[in-house]
Every structure is written in structure tokens, then in C-alpha cells.
Image 1: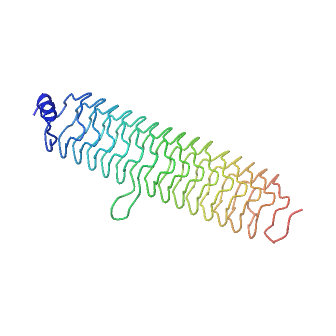
Image 2: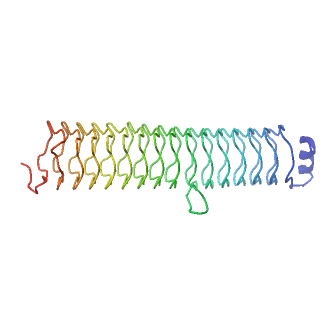
Image 3: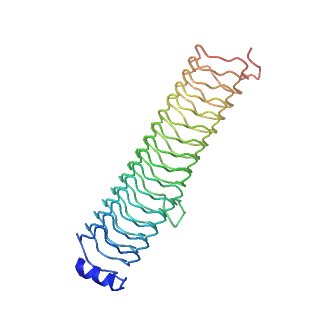
Length: 331
């Protein structure tokens, strides 16, 4: 089948084109709404600005396909191979991508609102400026693995409120991304770039942010229970009112950070740089501060019950009104 035959059969009312082989075809601006391309081989084909709403591309081969600006609202792309495909500016609202391969795909400024992205492989994909609000990326044990976003470019992406539980974002670039209220429970964010990102009220319980860069990030009211932030870079970040019990922050850089009213109960702050940090009214009960740098930090009215400061650097520390390790209030 060639392009002319496909279009003629479609115009005659036919919609079933499953299993067809049509590589490198030019279908730019084509109207193929509701067409069934299940298991079709369309590698390298062009669908630029094509109308593909409700089309079925389940398990189709769309590797290296050109779909920039295409309309794929509610299309079925489950299990499809879209590796290295170009979906720049594509409208993919409500599309089904379950277990699709989008590795190295270009999704720049794509509309993925309410798309089903469970089990998708986004490794190395370019998602700069993409909108994923309401998208489903949930990890479901024994059904869908956590979404693979290793090395993905998500600069400026809108992920507000998205469920990324168990997602692998190792070395992902999330600079300036909106992650407000996003669920990242158990997510892997090792060496991720979260510079100037918005993580306000995000859920990062048990997430691994070892070596992550969070310079200028908004971490107000974030939940980081049992999270791993070993050697993370967080100078000057806003973490006020956040929940961090049992967090691992050893060797992290929090110089000049705002940790006021933060829950750091049993936190591991070994060798952490907290110089010039604001820890007013913070709760550090049972926290470990072995060789911690607290130079010129503000610990006024902080709870320091059973904290051992003997090996910490405390030059210039402000302790007015703090509850000291022995239970006394510092004058």
C-alpha cells in the first residue's frame, strides 16, 4: 500500500489499516481521525500537523516518525515504538501511551495533559516546556514500573500535581520545572538538576536525591521524610515549614538556606554545611551534627534536645531562646 491508496481508502470510509507497512511516507496535514494503525510499520513517516485524534497506533512502529504539531487527542499509542520520534508541539491530551517507548523522542512544548504515561520509557527524551498536568505516571506494583525519565530534558516542564511515584529521574534536567504538589515518593533523582525548580508542597518521602543540584529551588512545605540528600547542593534554598524527619543530609551544602520551622527530628546532618543557615524554631531533636558546619547559623528558639555539638563548628551561632540538649532554655 502506498500513500495515495491509503488516503483513497480512508476517504471511501475505510478505517482499518492494521499491520500495514508504510515506511517513510509523507502524510503531512493528512486527516486520519479514528484510523486503526494497530501493529503498523510507519517508521520514519511524516505526520506533521496531521489530524490523528482517536487514532489507534497500539504497538505500531513509529520510530523516527515526524509528528510535530500533530493532533493526537485521545489517540491510542500504548506499546508503540516512538523512539527518536519528533512530537514537538504535538497535542496529545488524554492520549494512551502505556508502556510506549519514547526514548530520545522530542516532546518540546507538547501538550500531555491527562495523558496515560504509565510504564513509559522517556530515557533521554526532550520534554522542555511540555505540559503534563493531570498526566498519569503512577507506579503500580507488578503492573507498571516507575516511569523511566533517566537523562530526560524537562527544563521548564509543567508537572504540577503529577504522580511520579517510583520514577527514575537520574541525571534528569528539571531546571525551572514546576513540580508543585508533585508526588515523587520513592523516586530516584540522583544527580538531577533541580536548579530554580518549584517543589513547593511536593511529596518526596523516601526519594533519593543524592548529588542533586537544587540551587535557588523553592522547597517550602515539602515532605522529605526518610529522603536521601547525601552531597546534595542546596545553598540558599527555601525549606521553611518542611518535614524532614530521618532525612539523610550528610555532606550536603545548605549554607544560607532557610530551614525555619523545619522538622529535622533524627536527621543525619553529619558534615553538612549549615553555615549562615536560618534554623529558627526548627526541631533538631536527636539529630546527628557530627562535624557539621554551623558557623553563624541562627538556631534561635530551635529544639536541640539530645543533640551532641562537641564536634560541630558553632562559631557565631545564635541560640537565643533555644531548648538546649540538657533541656534548659538558652538566654
